[in-house]
Image (cartoon, rainbow, N blue to C red; front, top):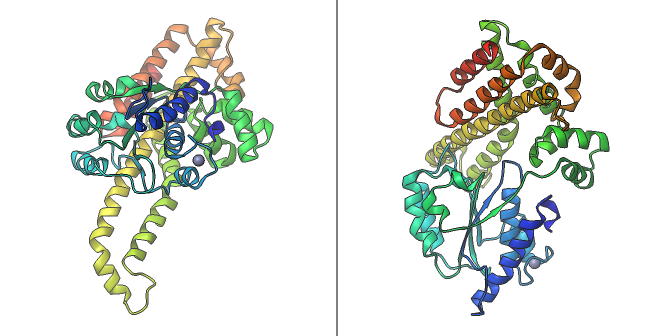
Length: 388
Ligand SMILES: [Zn+2]
């Protein structure tokens, strides 16, 4: 079952032996790598969530992750009652969210061997929320296992990090991503290689690029931005285009999900049942519906931000390609299909200006999570790029 986590042989070995050690520890045998708090780090798209899930399956499985038993299958399908996957609904974890979590963490497992809590985006714990969790992670209940995920360990509160064992994933190589797309998703060879390269090592993004023409279109629009920055109006228009591309991708990701969640909420309040009027259901469900809409809004905001960051990564990679040609570095370009126009930009601009542009994009990436008005931040970036 580990074949889905590509290019991570070293980390897989660590996690597989950790699952064995966890069982030995429960049986009172001495072990070398037993820990009840793990932090899985890796760049976006490298497979942190997949790794966490596979590790959880190995911990719950009698055979340390056979991939075929009921326990393994239910973990992999997100239906195991003793594996909870927690994601922040908004831009960060609030204190209320984590207070409930400490209660969950004190529970005994029902069916499984462990009560496992997978905490996605642990870098988005506010200091207060992190402090609220600290004790639960430091002195976990006997059968509780924490698996935290974050882009890198330096993004996680140091108090939390110091209590976890860290497993670091690397950016998966493009060749292996392409192979996965061919084998798992039936993508043809040329498209698989294009998408793997264009994804900048982001496995989920690679699949979208390979299978959705609109996603490919939006990507090439983003990559036109460097050629469009001429005067103020064109800079503003480009910034708006970047925001819109992120919004359209976020819509694609959330529309269906939002609807499903609303449907199951209304069903829980009796929709479709005999003897209850539609108006009564609406009235009963109105509080919960509002709450759901609020959290969906927050999630939407977060996904849009993440998507915007991806556009900025693509732009930074574009300027890195320009720099590679300008300095004659012998490396494969990120955006190979644009080689001609990258070459032209390399001839018409200086190395200094390219370095400046990469810095501008990277500085914008760092600013984005803390700034409320993303359009303003991007306008400032496009104007600076035009002047660099
Ligand atoms: Zn199994």
